[in-house]
Image (cartoon, rainbow, N blue to C red; front, side):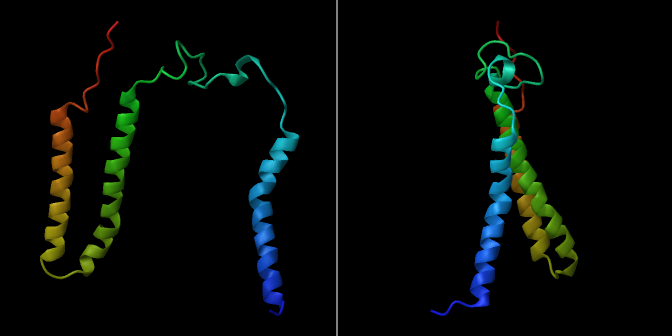
Amino acid sequence: MVFSWLHFAIILFLLGGLLFAGGPLILSYLVAPRARGGDMGMPYECGMRPYGGAWTSFGINYYVYAMLFLAFDVDVLYLFPVATAYRFTEGWLPFLEMVIFLTVLALAIIYFWAKGVFTWPRKIS
């Protein structure tokens, strides 16, 4: 195998990429202050000291809402490129596909609503 300028450029760009990615990590390790103890080891909850066990302060409802938001957000993001390409289509098939997609999305919201996912539970003391 003959070593050419193309190989040299590939190796140079690979090293540059690794330095670009790893340089800030190494630099922050070398330059960052070494403060330990106090509030540095505590979990961050909106600037206030956590109340109770730090890992059990948030209920599972926050995560359920986050997952539902992500699921429906991705579905809605699908609609933007489809809406821009819709004017270039012909016939009723693309319209029917979008109606089916929106119907399934609406049925999922109705199902979650019927299951009580969107109701916030009251804290029992």
